[in-house]
Image (cartoon, rainbow, N blue to C red):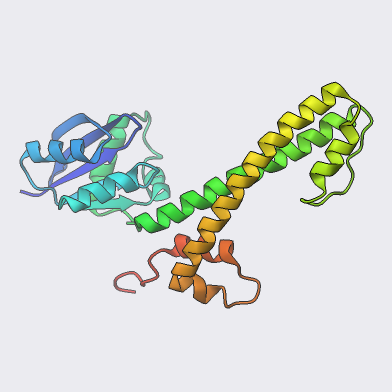
Length: 242
């Protein structure tokens, strides 16, 4: 007896729906959004699923990896395709979304997407963290300029090396501004150290990745561009049947 399942993933709990080949609901439940909990739920259900649908999302890749390792037939499906299929729903709830995903699995109306490998996810996480710190560094420097401008002190053009000296030059003799600048520059230094650490890590990763090294032989392509491209493509093999 063929059965199909849909999982609507939320942060704490996921809604699960199981349909038979005729589209009748044969099981529903709320399960912790953990691979082990979902594996146990399907184990207790007692019938092997023909397909289990997971809408692509932040938690879905982690759940997909854990469930496929346990031998479950899980499909990671494209978010836009799911949303288009659900447009006609008058009321959206987690339970109804799970039912809808199960129907897509039963009918075969879905578009599978590639689940990023763990190394690709790690590279993307490092790139995201680096970009975050870079943004905070820029925010601190621009905020310092804005604070001083209110007192008629114009920082003007600076480089990474001359910025600190220029700030100290302008705030000298202003106790309150000196204290503010000292605190902000201390935070800036800490962020700059962490930013440099991320750069070192990413350079080391690029040196160890054959695809990234090959891309960096192209003029104008550096570590960040190469790793961003490699982690985005992840699996360059053509789709089956192409």
